[in-house]
Amino acid sequence: MSSSGVTPDRSPGAAPPDGPASSGLDRTIRALSWWWTASPLILLTPVLALAMGFPVVRAQFGIEFASAALVGAVVAPVAGFVVAHVGHRRRVRRRFTVMGAVSAVPILFIWVFAVLLAECPDGYHC
Image (cartoon, rainbow, N blue to C red):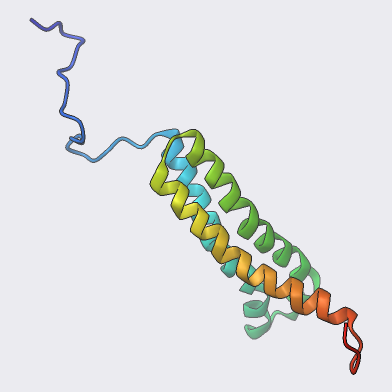
């Protein structure tokens, strides 16, 4: 006895024939993942522009591209982790944790070698 507006229950885990429906949470997770993935490309854009013969791009926009890449590498994993935590997605939380760890390694190297070791003059032990 079913009415015309009610659909039968599907078994748990059964997806519709055209694939699982994408929710706003899934789209947000996907966008944050792509943003993080694009960060190295954003960082290399001024170098590629210089190699292609456009030195003006590197001279004028190099800092902006570097800042955008750094923000993408840091903010995307943190925001993705928060979104996955709110959405109770354990596997996605692990993925964003790994993204954060991968992003932390180059940032840590830049901080150590460019900031901390730059403060020690040659020949002095800090």
